[in-house]
Image (cartoon, rainbow, N blue to C red; front, side, top):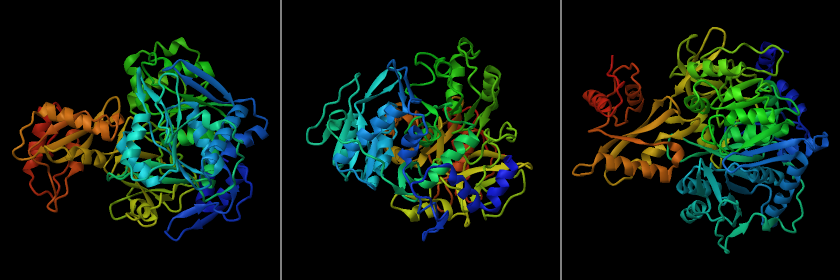
Length: 635
């Protein structure tokens, strides 16, 4: 069937459609129930089926004759290391490490926190947890100890898995002291920390709690796969909320496996034996779905890359990887290609490599600007395909379906049409659908397809209030946009206080908490401003306490360091502008949306609820003085 037929089939009888898709994967016990509604008002797909996600990714592939095929190509230009790990070898590594975890008390349903760089042991850690039926929670290596501590207290891991260090360009970052500080800060204390010692830097181990990665595996029995139910959790992945408390998105085993199998083949056009590259990190949802689980469940060879698009050693690194491993398709954030273009505007480095294996490139995570699109398209002579999804969904909501015989044509500026299972509507503030071409809130009619998260760890009520309450009967994506007359979706940006920095979703509310804790700061607002390279960057508008005397440059330096220490360098918080006061509604709410438009020189109407309209002129003038030349007053 073509796109239209597939979409209509899922729309007209979703349960039947997704019951058919579930036949694509191997179950220990096939589900008798396809879809079940929970007491909290959410849904579970395939709740009573039995399977194991590690089995699907490794053991099943070996049973299909792919044991000697490469499962992971590890490529680390920052350390000069390369490995080609077969399915057989990866299965053996995972089974042995799972046995080590089991010997230290990790069982089905336990949680394990993973704080590791992009090394093969990180994939081993994830898959070993899945093999045991334990629930892993990967924390991105760029997060500071405070952020890790928050996640430790929420997930309450029995064990923490880490490495001695990570690499940031040419800088070696010791991970163990960060983990130690996080544990010291957290109320919950894990049973032990298992440390993978890297040659570049050896961590000092605390005999009372720390264990060596290799030593814990000595003499242990390899673990077999533990059957879990389709509704049982596979992992927790924390995503930024509009408050300082991150949300632990929970992914189930059954729906996740079906959705990734479906997406890998139908969306990305990948088949067994193909080489796939998800150019991201395991700390993000892309790394979970399309570096580890999806490609391996689909019998592909997955690139596991430790490095950056530039300076490792140069802006030709991505092209070298594509040529060396014969990459057939890849996924990347536009930020990476903007960085490459900045260093090599004429694409000379790309022309030094044979890129003929590449069929197409998918981009997501932030807006694909026309300049980057045109540059890539002309340079590579392959389709550059925009699509859209979220941590919460785990796989694309809108995308061209390159695995179909007649995929709908891409349209520049659009993230494409909805995928089967996603009944996307654009509504106004009252929940009424708006006319074609008119912007509004992008929502998805319930229930959504398999693979989508349906709960927040230990807090179903927060999931319902965060996503299902604003527009009853719909999942509220938090994104704004519109639909054209042919059904293509256009995303215009977030409607909440989450910004997108180089494809990473970060909470401005979280940064505000850090900034406002400075003793000289009375109040603040952190907004996202457009940036040519990273998409968005945070800027703090700061009101100083009466009587405080502090140099503005000194204050900015201190605030930048605070955010770096408590949120992480990935926040890219570099600017703080002192203002006399902040614009508020009469009820005291800061008008952040208006501030964003002023900084971006976008037209806006004077808010009817503003307490003092003259403040906006003050803000505009101050931003212009601070170098935001495009800051604009109301029309």
